[in-house]
Image 1 (cartoon, protein in one colour):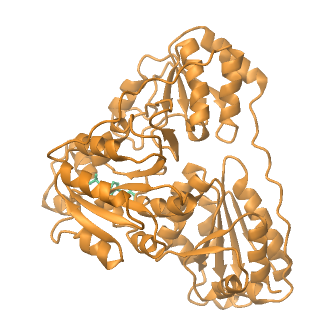
Image 2 (image 1 turned 60 degrees about the vertical axis):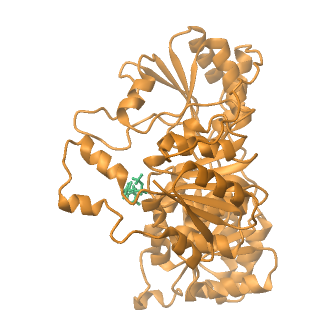
Length: 512
Ligand SMILES: Cc1ncc(C[n+]2csc(CCOP(=O)(O)OP(=O)(O)O)c2C)c(N)n1
C-alpha cells in the first residue's frame, strides 16, 4: 500500500466520503488511489474557490467535513477567500494539498511555494506529512481537528513522494472530543441577570440558530422579556413556518445601532460581539451602546443547545406555543423590487428547501420577507469575501441531496466563482439559481454616496458591470445549465415554479 492509498482508506474510515477536487500532477497518486478504492464521491470544481466553498456548503448541511484536494501552494491560495468565509462560519473542512516531492523541494521548481504559510491563517491545524508511513495517522488527526467544536479547518500537505512511496499504514478514526458544555455557575449567573428584567438582548450565532435551540431561546424570552436577535452573518438558520422567527442584526451601521439602542445587557450565545464590517470616519466600531454590559452564556465552541435549555430550565421557563407567522405570502406582481422579489420567493420556497443567499445590496430585504415561508434553512456568506454563493449552493445540494436548493445571487459576486454552474450541471444537482442582474457593484456606489463622494467617470466605470452586459442565460447554457430571463415578478414566479419540478439545475436571470 502506498501513502496515497493509506490516506484515502483513513479518510473513509474517519467518515469522510466526499471529495471536492481540483488536482494537479502532485496529487495524481491520490487520484489514482481513488480509482482503486471505492466509497469516495469525487466532485470536480473548475477553480479552487469553487472547491473550497463547495466543501463549506456540504459541511453546513451534512454536518461532517468533506475533503478538498488542492494543487500545491498556488491551488490552495486560489481557494483561500472561501476558506476565510468557512473559517468564519466554523465549518469543518479537511484540505489535502499536494506539494513538491520532499527531495525536489530544495530545487525550487516552479510550483514550489510556502504552502504551510498560505495554509496557516485559515487553518486551525496544519501539518506536512513526513512519510508514507505517517500520512494515514496524519489524516486521522486532521479529521479529528476538523470535527473539534465549533468546527475547524485542518490542512494536511502531502508531498508527492509521501503519496507514491510504499509503506502506507491505514489509521483508525480518532474520537471527536465532546463539545464542551457551559458550567452551571454561568447559567445561574445569566439567570440572575435576566431575572432583573433590565433591557437585554440574547445575541445568537451558529448552533443557537437551529430550530430546537431557538425554541429554548423563545422560552427564555417569554419568561424574562429579553429580546432575541441573530448575528448579521450566520452559517445556517432554521426558519419559516413552525419555527421560532429570529430577527438579524442589520448590516449597515446606523440601523444596527438603532436595533441595539437602549439595551443594558448583551448576552452572547455562540455569537461574538457585534462590530461594524468596516470603519467609517465618526462612526463607532462596536454596534451596541457603550454603557451596555456584555455577558457570555456560551462561547462559539460550547454547546448552545445545552446552554439555552439549561438556562430555560434554571428560569423554570414554561414551554410556549410557536408564534403564528401568518399565512405563507402570495407571489408579488409587477416590477421586481427587492421587497417584491423577496415576497415572490417566500411564496414559492418549497418545504425543507435550502436557501443560499448572496444577494448583496438587492437581497437586503429577502430575509425579512421570507419569514413566513415554508420551513427552510438559510445559508449566508459569513466572512464578507464575496464569491461564495454559487459554490456554497452546489456543496449544500451534495450535502443534503433530497432537498431543493434556491440560490439567490447578486451578479457581481456570481462572476467570481461562476464555474460552480458547470459542477451543478455535471452532478445534476437540484439547484435553482436566481441571478440578481443589476449589472452594477451597487453596494459600492451606496458606500461612495455614504462617504459623501460623487462618483467620477473612473469610479463609475469601476462599479459598472455593463458594456458589455453579462448574458447569464448564455453563460449558464455554455456550462450545461438551462436558463431563462425574467423581467417581472410574474415571470420570476412562473420560472421558479417550473424549476422546482425539474431534475438538475436551472438558472433565472432576473433583470432588475
Ligand atoms: C473577495 C472580495 N473582493 C471584493 C470585495 C469588495 N466588494 C464588496 S461588494 C462588491 C460588489 C458586489 O456586487 P454585486 O455582487 O453585483 O452586488 P450589488 O452590490 O450589485 O448588490 C465588491 C467588489 C469583497 N467584499 N470581497
